[in-house]
Figure 1 (cartoon, rainbow, N blue to C red):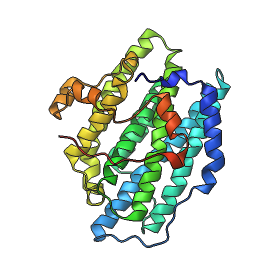
Figure 2: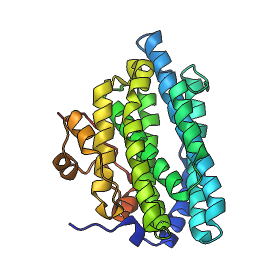
Figure 3: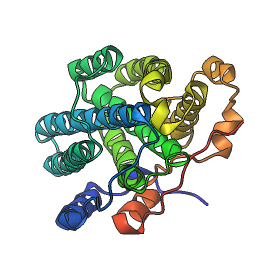
Figure 4: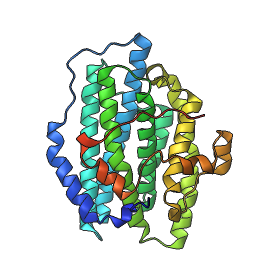
Length: 296
């Protein structure tokens, strides 16, 4: 069945939907009634590392969305307001994660060297298309990690936190596709070619992240390094298979090294990025969150 590209849902729809979501956000909170039990200290420490990484991602998304809104306001005030409201949702996630970290006996920690390097590069991005593409790809790997963790994590409170994050990414990913499509409408062929190169570099870099994250978080989420790399390759690859007109395909040699081909990406719609998917995810309580398992 044909889908509706995210760009064909008018900005006014995204704006009214985000306003409605903002009105209902206060009624959605963590239910932390029972103490969380970890198997051992290593699992507890890994959980703190896992949710610290999630918090840093939300923090970065908040900052970049609000900064980008100030630039976009010059040519599209409605789209700028969409960006601000989206940033506010990222800020709400940061508040929930701060509360959850305290609940599991942790606190906000400094970023590790690899994470700090990536976010510094992200923070230095100045071109709108680069910022939006980077954020879209970060949202995608975040959603992938949360869904894969849901296949393994058993503690009810941790599953609740993961479900909230995953549920909202189901709306945020197609929203970022809308941002990207709107911004690319104003870009030249040279700027689009430049973005394709940046996409390739980001793709490779993000697939390497599990090499740094697994020693710190695997005792909690129990996701192997290769499994997470394959998960990232599958979701990042399938993301743009759905919108070939963007010209942002996955590196074939890298996919082959992970035992994946383009046929795998076309066969599996791992992240629905069209406007119809966004409409289904607009009402938080109606989103059905599914775990993601490594396919071999």
